Structure formats: structure tokens, C-alpha cells
Length: 382
Image (cartoon, rainbow, N blue to C red):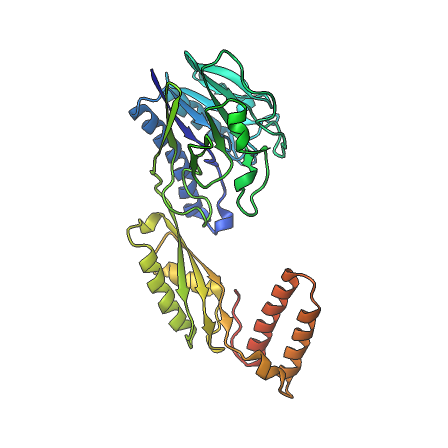
């Protein structure tokens, strides 16, 4: 008999979104959008005849989740009955004393895995789900440690929040570290995971990360949503569902040759309009990456440019990342017997003695700002 479930993770209810520059009404809309994503996931599961929903952690953010979120989750999951809900807490929603998982009165269709080792729950005859929960935010245990599953044969699925070390994104924190090769070694036909926000469906390695159902940072672009999982005998199939309502858009803009900030703004506006083709501007957050060599007179202030762009109502939010360079000939200036020449020689000497890339990057910025100031140009913030 075919068994269907829907897997999601990393919803991050109650996220502040302040790091993106979302405040006030926009931040509230984004948080409301996360709740709507959970409701849509339930609707999708019911529409496809799923018997269960699995949640691979980071359902909410512990430090901001309150009574209202607790009630929302209880009421939402209760409305899905008789469909079962299985939750494997992660690092942002770990099983700390006083957590929502410990204090809420969950409906009878909800099962929260609360042990730091995989424990079994029968889904159907011959089909077992094994899950665990993080008891602290910094848990470093291996979810797949231990001997292979031997319990009565059948098909076994694992549900947990963890960092697969062979595919860890740059800078991503390590919680629940494991290796993909251990999924099948432990006897699991699939590991339904959370933690990485980019979707990964690896049928060969039996590893599934659904990714965040709504984008949370600017590198979470493209279609997003849960993953439908179908178990038919020993065969496990996956179908991604793209149903996100919000979009992150990154627009590249070459401002090279622009002689004024007004000329740069015109190019940026055109780049944003092109990047937003097909997207709902009221639910699109845009980051513009400005590149190119600028005339010294085209001093940029990213904050002022963002404000000007917001007044044009091109998108819900527009952020500008200034990666431009000023078209100074540093070598030629260094040969001059001027204040500028003395300044350039001093910075070059410091750069030659720098021991790290971070130090050299800071000195490059110092050279940029210093030459702009000494040339009499208006100095804008990056």
C-alpha cells in the first residue's frame, strides 16, 4: 500500500527579519507570511492524501515565540486531524525548559520527538519513522550514530535536524553533524532533515532537505516549499512543491563609467525592473549588487540610494550592496609629491605588511575613502 507524507522544515516562525532591513509593517507581513506557509503546507498534504506531516526542526524561533504562536500551532495542527504531525526539534526550537514544545497542550495527532537519540514510531504496517530532538541549541551529537536498524525489517525513515558535513554551505553553523553515507548504513530508506535552507533531494543518498518554505535571506532565491514523500513498498519517491508567496531577488548592476549618483540611480532602477519580471513587487525583496569602476565624482551613499528607490515603490524592500571601485590610478598618484601621493604610499606600505586578507580589505576601503575625501568628492557610505 502507498503511504504519503509531506516534509517541511526551517519555517522560523516569529523571525524578526531586522537583519534584512525589514521593520514595522513589512516585518509583520513577513511573519504573517510564515504562518500562511504552514497553513498551505497542511492544505497541500490533505489535498494529496497524506497521512502525516513531518517537520525537521526550526519550526519557530525560541527567543521570540510566545503564547500567540503556541495557540496558532495548536489550533493549526488540530485542524489537520486525523492527519498526524511529527516534529523533530532543532537548534532554534530546541527542547529547553519552558519551550513551546514542553508547555503546550498538543492535540492527539501531534508527536514531538524529545529524546537525543532516534526513537521509533510506527506509521503503517512495515513502515517506521525514527526521530530525535535537540535538547539544547548547541547540540553536537551525531543523529546517525549507533548500530544499523534491525527492528523487524520493513522500511525505515529518519527525521531529524542536522548538518550534513559533505555539503555544508559556507558559514553555516554546525548542529547535529552527520555524514550522508551513514543514512543507508543505519538502514534508513530516507533521512528527512532540516537545517540547510536550500532544497536538496538526493534519491541516491536517501537524503532530503526541503529548505525554508519562504525565503529568509537574500541567498534563498527561486522556488521554495515542502516536499511530498511517497513510500510504495521499498520504493521512496519525492516531489518538491513550489508554493512560496515571497521572493528574494538579486539584481546585478554595472555602474561603471557613471559620472554622477543620479546616473547610477537610473541604472539601478532599470536593473531592479528587469530582475523583478514575473514577480509580485509587493512581496519581493531585492538586493542590488553594484559593481564597476566609478568616476570619483559619482560618490555613492547606499542608504540614500535605498531611500530614493523605496520612494519609487518598485518592491517591498530594496537593499543596495556597493561593490564598486573608484577609478583612481593609485600607482600614478603614489608617484606624486602631493598629500594624495603621501597618503597612497602610506596605505600601500601598510597593505604590504598586512598579514590577513581582512586587514588588506580594510586598507583597500581606507584607500577608497581617503582618495575620495582628498579629491574633494562627496563621500558616501557603502
